[in-house]
Every structure is written in C-alpha cells, then in structure tokens.
Image (cartoon, rainbow, N blue to C red; front, side, top):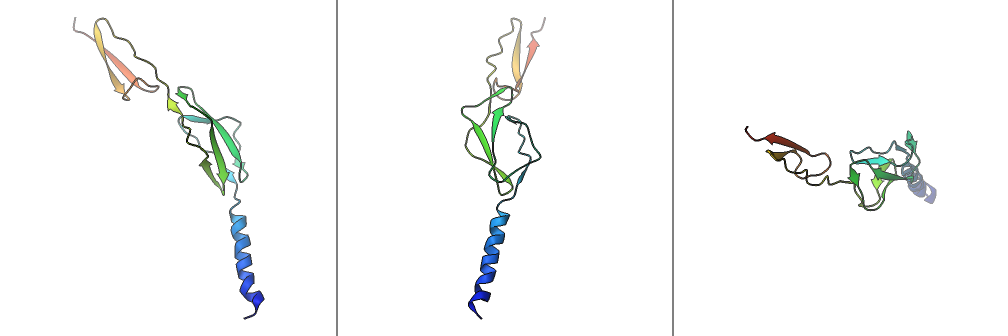
Length: 118
C-alpha cells in the first residue's frame, strides 16, 4: 500500500463530514409562549441566530435566542417566557370561587364563581 491510497479516504471522509455539518435549518420552532421577533422564512443558513419575544400573557427576563446548527435549532440561553400573574380575582359578596384550570392566578388559569344558596 502506498501513502496516497492510505490518506485519500481519510481526507475525503473529513471533507464530507465538514460539508454535512453546514445544513440549513427549516422554519424555526413555534411555542405556546414564544414568537419570532422578525418575519418567518422557510429556511435559514447554518449559524443563523434568531431573537424571540414572549407572546401576550407571558413575560421574560432577558432575551431569547435560537441558533441554526447543522439543520437543528438550538436555544442559546436559559431565558424562558413565564405566564404573567393576573392577581387575586376578588371575593364575591354572596358566593365563592375555585380555580377550575391551573393551580394559581396566572395567565391561562380559569376561576369559577358559585353563588350561595338563596
């Protein structure tokens, strides 16, 4: 075996691997709490970085970024959108309430009031 036949397959494999790592990404992820801060495209080049905002009813502390890496969207930081507090709903003079959906007075929870007898 000569040196050329030994090294050629290694160089060819390395160049194919490098080309495979630069896949474009399809449209970025949609979530219940986050929305893309710019106009959505069908695809994005490798290493594109996109900024997200929180949808109405949600809040964040910091900026949310995703990056296209080899055809996959990856979150660049740990900032998340959290449901906003709606505050205490208030007591009814002749009734009560209970939380029907959720477990706190946060955006998306539902409170049901019932009237006292009479």
